[in-house]
Image: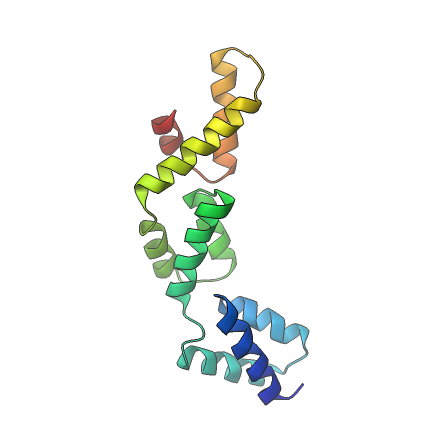
Length: 146
């Protein structure tokens, strides 16, 4: 694949949905594009605003909260794994609407509570806390909703 073909494909790839630099690099490496060409393509995509780390972080955080019901900790970890700037991650997490965040946490806990058998309150709360912690919610947030 030539550099121009790869650039055209990546521009189309980035114009259909939000993607980050690591997604683009991974796709180009799988297509056996040279490292120099990858860097040129990535630079072009940033210059033409196909790629924007802050915009990607906001969209990723919003989507993971609404559709996957992840908490801030799990979203933060996923964004770190994509090697995105800490500043953009913090900003995206701070922009999550608090009221909606707490409502989703409440819904997640209610849904899990319905699946638990009739156990004593101590065991039940422990299971709910562990479940929500695994989803990326902090203990303080969980206790506030419980």
